[in-house]
Image 1 (cartoon, rainbow, N blue to C red):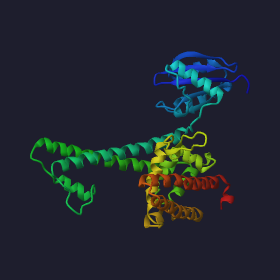
Image 2: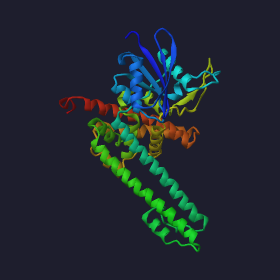
Image 3: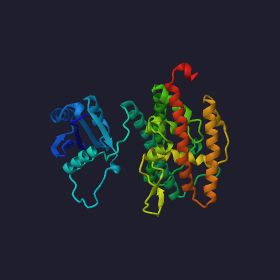
Image 4: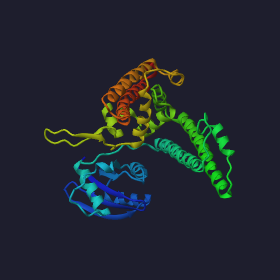
Length: 376
């Protein structure tokens, strides 16, 4: 379409700086507006017709509310990856006006990279999964505080008793101190451990309920991914919440790059220099996949838990999961044999595991898109 108008928005909690880059090459600032729905609507009507506008802003703490609002107005909007926005090495002045102008100018030039934007339902699932992760981290901190408090005062766990079991918690409740201040501290730490455990149960129950309300295709992929070793329901839901449709990646290497698990590179001329992983990607996806990759340090086997998860899986998917066990375990052994550390090795295995996740996800998504007769 001719006469396109490119709009750059520098979005903050209370204000939005607006700049426009037009087809004739001019870039001008339109000032600052309040970050309110009515103000954004007036700004859009002032700049031009919705079909002429191409709007962009950086991904950040304000989320995707502005994107959804502009989409409802019929405006094409893209949310940009902040780490991939070009930066001039000699530029030492940063203001909201300049940032908005730079976004508009670079967007018109095609130098910006957009991120995938989930719909409201998918964003709700992601929020729930991340709330469960926050509770899990809080549980780790609470247990650490209580355990170190007991250790600091010479209260050691009896032998042959696993930590944080019901038996262990019952033993902690029998511990007493001479001073009332320490008794109060113990009760507070113990209450926090029990409270976080209740939070986790409640959130995981909510995740189970939410899965039942998801679209058929998403539920099918979540179930299929559980045929892989190391990926149970929470891991599968986390992967889908962070990635969305796996078929939007044309090749598994793109999914690996999206996770930030690929190596960084600084090569010039004949010199090729690669380093540690770039971490320029989705940290939640990278974390859950590397956690799952630790399971492949063991020789291939199908235990009781994995067999139960595979009971309703398609035989082709089970075959892919079995192939993944052999390939990734051999990969682990080779890298360990070359002197790599366990962390480096598991990270490499996790990156390759993403290829099998992509393969299974794409297979299932294509099957659920076919008519019922073709699927059967």
